[in-house]
Length: 256
Image (cartoon, rainbow, N blue to C red):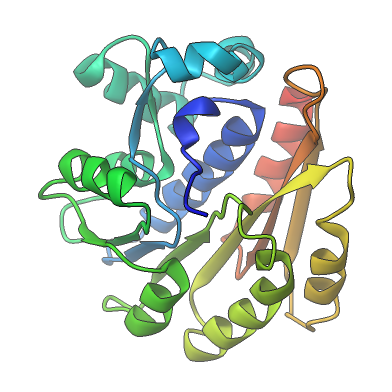
């Protein structure tokens, strides 16, 4: 329990999928001259170095951001944010979604970030100092406490490690409750596509949840290393901003 550290997986193909789609949604939301809120339930440490021993041990970024970056247009917000972050933190830096979001957001926008792992929370607090309100608590508890946030416009990213296997069973009900409390919020759930099929029942429940206009997008890729059970990445989004479907189509080409 609480052993997961994303540094071993930072910048992998699933990160590229999730972060590119998140950046696209934030770009649209920030076009309006109105403040917004960004919430995240499983934040990690916020910033990773791909030449760290942990990242080098798995080498997952080589199949992810290293191989795929050239497939994005230079003006894509994901690429622009990555460039800005690497200019500040070094050429092998890779942002977690909290730092990616804060780079794309504006003064006046608010961030609430939850992380339960004590060491990851300490690193997150240091990375996001003066940029966000960090909560050392269960991410769903934070989301229910804050939602609906102020400002009311905004997005919630649910990005578990699924280290707690019961997440697959409990997430659909959590999303339903949060959507009821914050019906105008964009709620985005990331999930892995697994050879075990463990994600299947959760998705069936979500699809049966009668969320009007929900968007589901998946990309597939080879296992990043021998014996790895993740063969793709998915996002399930409620109240997806305009243009998200077009971004999904573009991501299909990136991963083709």
